[in-house]
Length: 382
Image 1 (tube, rainbow, N blue to C red):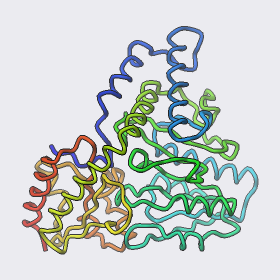
Image 2: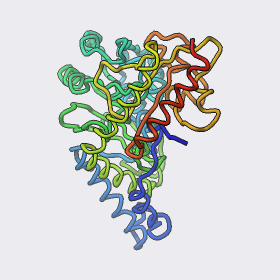
Image 3: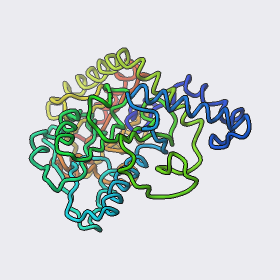
Image 4: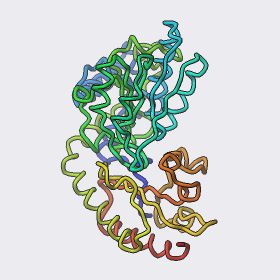
């Protein structure tokens, strides 16, 4: 199989796996129990990982909170903020977000309707970018929270988070940013972005699944939404996933260290892939191509005859792994809400495919994949 679904999840780096293994069978103690050696060693590893991640992102260690991934991080931040507003009896307020956010942002935001709050949903430009001008005009005195992602997970389009952050900062509005697809692909320096919180998942940059972190600038604004043993200062209670945390830290270090070397190589492969595909039929559209994009994502719309699904044809023989949207949408067999927001019909959305590369993708794989896709395309094209 040629794996071109790295925006959904990446292969773990061998070095990361090696670092993690001792914490499964050697230093397997609970990191919150430091009354014996196994717990102490586990605790040391967590402290080291927290310090390392904070140093890379440019924040304080106590501003990093371990989670199970970006979905949980987004929920903790958004629901915690809403709960804080409720506690302070804020009634007339709104949240500004975009129509192309991940569902782990859009769904928890809907809970403000219970409080009587309003949701302002910004539509993207046809290229998939959120207009800074449109965003600024949407901010009102009653705006309390903004949720805009750094990099769109389907298009790879990069939003101007720094400009959005500056606007939020000047207006005293809390800014949460889903940075899941940005970390390791573009610089994420917190002091430059003016964000109040960001979400990260390890499995997007060759770390393990089921672990992530949430940066919170001021935790007093986030009220806990569930309770347990008080871990992570009560923000995210529960026994820590020590092997995962160690893996996240190591994966982040390796990714940032190699980013300037890996991303240009990946971009060259992506451009080659798109060139072969586009040259075959001028009706094929590479979405978001005119905007700044991360190097690893290519989102392509194919003109397919009505009643046919190109993804099903591609995946039925198991040669290529790709998707028609986020992993969540694929699991539900729903057309991408991102593509629908760009004005595509249900049929067009279902036949828009996301191909995503990684440092493990080879030039040979790109050529084989491109020509195999075009061979299948010719069978069901319009």
